[in-house]
Image (cartoon, rainbow, N blue to C red; front, side, top):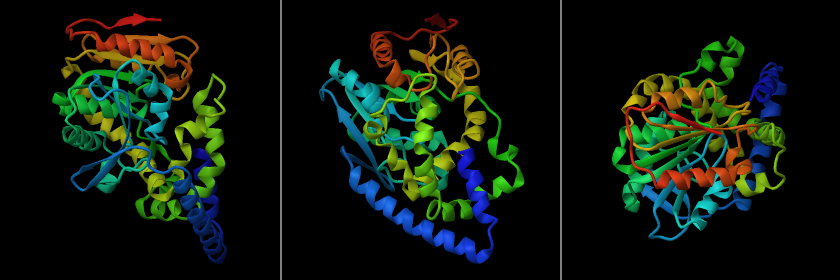
Length: 338
């Protein structure tokens, strides 16, 4: 993200005629990328119609199995957790429903920029589950979607029987936009962000996509087949790229409003994180989150990084299966397992 913004600032500092040329070439490249990515990664599961549009899903497992809803993090889509842990859960007999979050993958960006709030996305997921006749269900959320899963449990408890939060982003954190230098803040202003997402943004993001894939797997080596399995290129399309930026920049404000309510949660909750995660540090997110939720089970995996749904998929499947057999408890400090 930092490298992309730095390049975008360089583009904006060019003379007007040269800037126009760069943007025009970028727009053509973006068109080519959009067509290629869409053709290579078509919708792979059924859509669910809700008010204002539709959400895309991937589904697996027996239709009469206990339902598990899995939600992906930033810069991703439903294929990411489905191919990492979802297929394993389906093989265990669960009915697995993975959503493209609103604006990601093939889901519509219903509500536009307002959909950056986890609470708004939770309302859409809850409506989709109602249309599907699903719930209460175990809800799995990875990274950014930890906040979404929590919002779903807080605002739509009738849809959630238990929470499985993997490397969750959930606790208050600094406002990254406010802390940016003034010239960086220009790039993320809605009109500028919209323009860049349709010109030079996708080609630059395509260039840095392999770098990002290596970074999120650290300290484990990246899996060679991950980009294809997770259909990572879907984030390169203009509307998806813009939605992803909005989701990232709006999260700190949403967490400040949402986090004081975590003590209200009274359902079985698993908080699982890698102790070596450099992206979402367990000591600032998973550990305090588990303390905030009565009776939560905290599992810390030594040496594991952010992509535990791939590098620790077997352990994660075991923990979710264990969660499925639990009953709610309240008023206890979280237990810790390694």
